[in-house]
Image 1 (cartoon, one colour):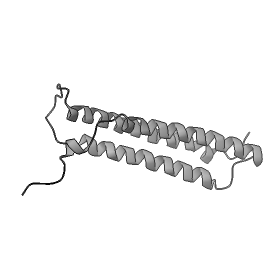
Image 2 (cartoon, helix red, strand yellow):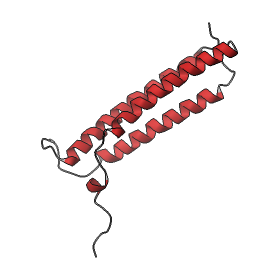
Image 3 (cartoon, one colour):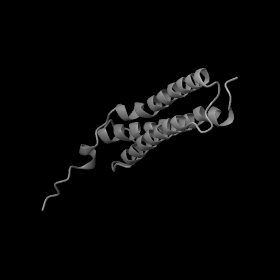
Image 4 (cartoon, rainbow, N blue to C red):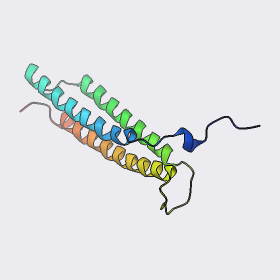
Length: 126
């Protein structure tokens, strides 16, 4: 009996979209944070006691980045040849992009947290 499931390396495609999702999400969160702060300061003059919209936006950004990192971690575990990866095969390219995406996801996760910290520590708009 033949296995009908496609092989992992045929099912997972090498694409740059996975690589740009974490930093793009961080950039969108950065823009959202500054727009939220500018609008809050212009209308109220201070940040809200509990900034619900800001917390929701931050949590969504962190979830998207964590999901991207998890997908990259799964892609980096695709079975293939042992190191060193000197051949230009599809599996080697997939692993390279997956590791790069994991590193960018980690950096972007920390960047989103650092972008959100001023709201925690600064209560007014001065």
